Length: 259
View 1 (tube, rainbow, N blue to C red):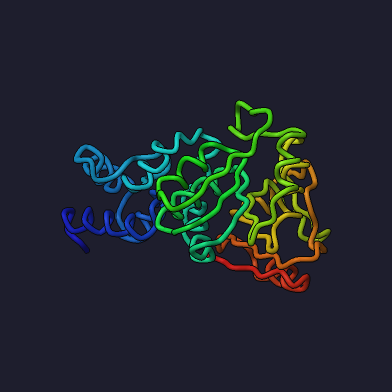
View 2: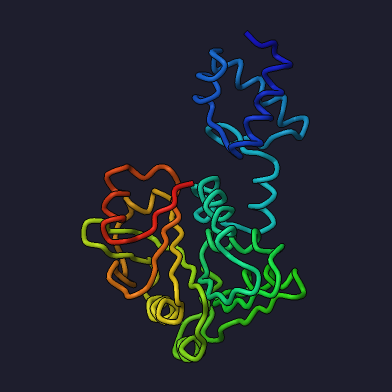
């Protein structure tokens, strides 16, 4: 059995890999009591090595991302999965690409992973993404006008839709609220954003959908598109998706990437 000192070092190493971990996982990993893990986490937090959560701990780096992006509690749900999805999706983007990026918590995390890309042209309906993209001076960020929604920091309305319809891009990247696998449909949860998202999807030669696996269980709200749209669709999702569900996607020629 590891010493207390070595166990705490290992906890820090585990968080560097996974960004977050639960108390139950740590108890199982080290084969010690919950009380021992509580003491370890309290010690590490007091020494600014980790940040505690109600069920375990997250890395200081991940907590800094949440605070720097001003994510609200809802946006922070499944933050580890979203960050993994965002990091991988950034590898699908090439220097010089033109993109539509719709506002969501996962696409916001994606934007932070695109800072090292060059000569991007990004059209977006949220200034949060636009300001991140412009941290690289050679990138262009074009904000779509319209009415600003307070809770989501996104713009909607006829003006936004008309701007989108005038620009074609290499890739459109969106987050979704729910996926109906059996009926082949994708949904979002804000009605006013439906025409904006649909125009973005039309404008892109390729559609990339970002979704953590909780979206497979969410209630369906507002339909935006189905599997039959005439373009390449890539779904980037965490490994919480079952093999059976992944097979259904692939029958529709959707490129499913699990991270």
